[in-house]
Length: 88
Image (tube, rainbow, N blue to C red):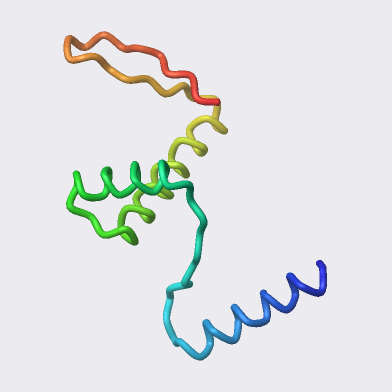
């Protein structure tokens, strides 16, 4: 662990203790295109950015868990025909 990351972790720990909350504040940098896409998706579902991030992480974890168990994920067409989806 570098000195910088240790300092960051220390600050995060202190922030969490002072906050007495189960939440961690994160800051991310996104391209304008990615931010616009994310905003559009969140608005489409009527979600705040925070709730949209939570849902995105939950879905990502589900996908990763399924793939790590050797399962395949597919989109099922309206007529019931499965279409395999390759996730890289």
